[in-house]
Every structure is written in structure tokens, then in C-alpha cells.
Image 1 (tube, rainbow over the protein chains, first blue to last red):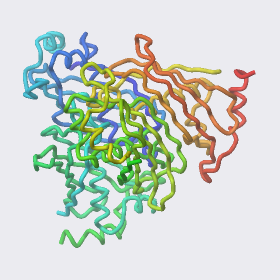
Image 2 (cartoon, each protein chain N blue to C red):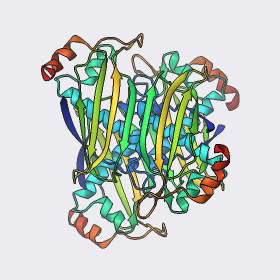
Image 3 (spheres, rainbow over the protein chains, first blue to last red):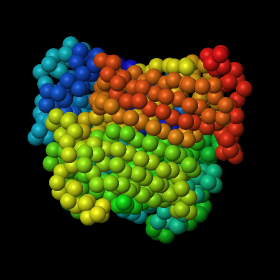
Image 4 (spheres, chains in turn purple, cyan, brown, green):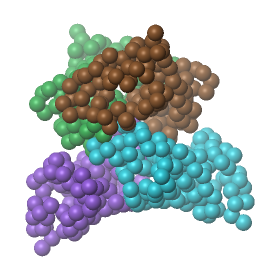
Length: 135
Length: 135
Length: 135
Length: 135
């Protein structure tokens, strides 16, 4: 398992009239965290796309445990669970400054060709960068 | 089972650089659809909140099947599966103008007191309005 | 002057902890309204882009007059003030169901080549479709 | 003049199908920057609200100069131009990592009572914290 942590402060416009971080913004927080997880491998998600590979999300799951509020400094932890072949299987945990668990989440992304949209295997450099962590 | 359908056109700012409806906007589309589902019962989600009851989301699940694109007119179907006691269990399907299935989804919301945040039962008028459909 | 009106209902996730439509969502509402304004001309903004022309926003101005709230049904009026040459000069008014003026706004968009990003003249079919209104 | 700088990295979901940071997300970036500007005074915008004072935006102006793109690390500079009496007059500049000017902007916010919504003077501790910079 390979994890990275990212800090995100809840923006005013991300709250809703309940005063909570709106439930629809969590997926964007996950995306920031997995971008930083990929950055840790020595390249960026942007570079993957620039080389003609996209990573659309296939599935998303979130369990909301405690509300997050405006100006809270959250820590989003993203963990890769297995060596990617055709998909990226990532889990998430968000905690607030008191280490309370705000939510858990999970996404599956698939490697696909930018032009055809068809699924494909993870690029060799990606597998190479990651595989040391799964041996 | 009790369903409602809502049309939502994909906004430019809801697309991402892949040209797809960003995966993080689907929860907002679900919210619009379940708001219209509740409206069908003869009252509004806003009125529920004005009476001191909130409905935070407890869990979310989405399977992304086909991409949606800018200016697509989507139909979001929201279905209530059982008579609500302390939670609202709603499933979703989004289809495009060709009736292709874009995604399926599911949310669980819980009735809670606005001041204490504690879970509570669905208000009587809510159960009353809905129960005819589940007999 | 050539105007179109669009109805937009304020989504829950577009409110903020003040209970107001967040000030940062107005530009998206303007974009929906000008897309409908263009649709009135017999083609779509999407088709313009598909032909290799983009319309990035050059400037934005909003005066916020009254708050809009969750579930409000707003009317967004977008007006084209002059025959477009290299830019689209559009003004906006948002009103609520009581016809109260919520805000006024203004955007300038420029026609540009999708590949080079360089400004260019409005396509002939666009000018043709619109010019009858300005004679 | 009193300025603060904040770094914001462009999120994937904040780009649009042009591949640019969507024009409607700049107001949220300004909000993050002015929140950090206020934090510099020794208190937070959240604390101001907790004391019953809100700061709705009265006007917004943005000139978009160059596009920002996915994963760009932007610097948002927010400057307070005069000692606030009943309003906060703030200007903004966003630059990318090459120090290219992405946009300039301006907002006027008004101090208002949370319950009545009526304008009021800036709280004494706010003026006190800031006034040294304007003498």
C-alpha cells in the first residue's frame, strides 16, 4: 500500500446552507489527493494526459461520517492498494485538524486512450515507478 | 418504488479538459433530481429545512458508464425504494438524449435535527405523503 | 438589442453558509443564459467550438443587488448590444420570482482560433444570423 | 496598501473543455486570497461571521488576460486599498509560475448584520488591526 497526504482548506463557496462542506465537493478533494499521490511517483497526472492517456473515473463511493465546515484544514489521505494493470484502485480518508474521521472513500479509474477512449494498460513508466512499493 | 425525472443540460463550466462532465458534478445532479422527487410529494426540501429538519447525505455511490458532454440534455431519474423511517434511500439513473445509460447512483440521507444534528424519524407529513406508494 | 431569458433554479450546493447563492456561481448562470441566447440564433455554442472557434471571456462585471436563495427560480436575461465583429458584448439581469432585481452583469467574449488561440472575426454565419436584429 | 499572497493549484475539475481554468472559478480564488489577507490581521473571516457580521460581495470585476491551465500553480495577490469603514475594497492579481499576469480583479464587500442583513460599520477590532497600515 502506497499513500500520500494533502492538506485542503474548506473554501467558503464549498459550504452549503447547512454550513457544511457540500457533499458534492468531496470528489474534487479526492482528485487533488490522488494527483498528489501520482506526483510522488516522479511524474504528474498532467504528463500522463499529455502523452495521450486519460484516466476517467469508473466508480466512486463515499461514506460521510462527520461534517466538515468552512475554513477547516482537512487532511486527505489517498492510498493505492495494488499495482495498477488497467485500473487505478485508490482509497481515501479525510480527517480534520482534531484527527476526527470526516469520511472514507474509494475510486476506480481506468487507463484509456485519449483519442479512441478505449481502455488500455497502465504505461510502463507508471508500473515501473510504482512496482517497488508492492513487492 | 416511486420515481421522478428531471432534465439537466450540461453546463460549459461543468465539463473538464477531457471534454466530459466532470465526475464531481454528478452528486449535484442527483441532488437536483431528489429535490424534484420530494417536490412531487406536495412539499419541498426547503420547507423541510425551514421546519428545523436537515437531511445530510450519509453515503454516495456512483458507477460511471458513459461520458456526458457539454450541452447534452440529460435525464436524471431518482427513485425512492422504501417508506422512509430515519433515512431516505434513493437510487439514480442518468441517461442522455439517445437513452444511453450514463451512470447509476445511490445515496442514503438521514433525517436529523437542525440544531442538535442528531438523527430523528422522518416527519409525519412526509411519511403520510409517501406511504400510499408503498402499500 | 437582442435578448433571451433562461430559468435557473438555485441548487443546494450553490448556496453558501450565509444561505445565499454563492457570488462565484453567477458567472456560470450568465454562461447558461448566453448559451441560450446563441441557441436562439439557430445554432449552438457547441457547434461554434466544433468548427474550431472558441469564445474565451475577456472581462466580467457583476453588481450584486439582492441575495438569491436555495430553490429560488431565477430568470436570467442575456442581451447582445451590438453586431459582433471580434467580440461579443453581452449584458445580464437576474430576477427572482417576485421580479426583484438580484444582479446586473456584463461580459465581453472574444472570438479566437481554437488551435492558435489568436483573436479572429466572428464567423460569417454568426454575423448573418444576428445582423437582422441590428438594422 | 496592504497585500497578501496565496498559492492555489488549478484542480482538474476547475478546467473546462477548452482546457482552461473556467472563468467562473476565479471569484472562488479571490475569496481564498482575501480570507488569507484577513487571516494576516490576526483573526479570521470565520470569527467575524461567528460574531454576527457577514460580508456579502457587492460588486466584482475581472479582466482575464491569459488562460491558466490544469495543475498550474498560481499566486493570487489580494490588496486592501483603504481603511475599511462600511466596505472592504480589495483588488487582486493572479500570476502563474512564470510570473505572467493571468488576470486582475476587484471586489467590494460590505459589512452587514447577520440577522437583519443591514449594512453596518466594520467592527472596531477590524479597524484597529488594519489602521496601522494606512497611516
